[in-house]
Image (cartoon, rainbow, N blue to C red):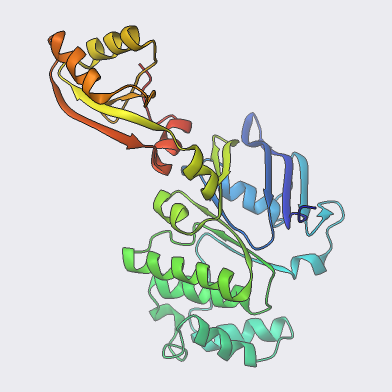
Length: 305
């Protein structure tokens, strides 16, 4: 028997006037997963997260958290989860420790958790500094520390690496993996950064213009990713027409390269046919589809020929 999803969205939709921000979204997040929610800016990621967190109401559809529908959700269920949406806000005239102590007091939590979180997120040396002095990366880490104070089972992170430099992105990425590995926390995080999603997710959903366009595990992606011959010719249009006719295939052009989807075709034969027809080749290689390729294909970042 499969495990019950910790978070399930069924036909979830949100409409603003005549615009659908999210439309018929169906997603299931399994316990223990790192679920990457991938989409361009404005694709509907933040709107979806706000609906999950009960900050805005769906126009239609159902949200299930820990097996309970959005109509059955009680305040105690939200205690089992935590979220950081966009940039975390703090009392800038308080230190990092004071911010966490204030949050712990409001939730009737032990102050011991504050020291534990400062240690976990490598903020012990900065604990007595005012948060107004913190870099964006330090604020993101402090935001994660605050979210984790009450030991949630599910963490939802909206663009957690937004605005960070490469070192800051790596820090947050490693923190997310550590929380999942050592604390067993299920994590849903949104991002428009492909490499970030590919490096840490166990499952990925791609959203485009408010609609789910693909969902897969990274293991599935590796098995199902397309393999093709990629080439650049002196006459791209002529080469595509010739190859389509000769091999009864359908080539496409992406990033300036012709892609031949049938890998059973031998590259040397392709090379010979094009040269015999007066078309020179400056690049020819075997290629496997990357996550970026799939994302661009599904969200309109390519040209079909």
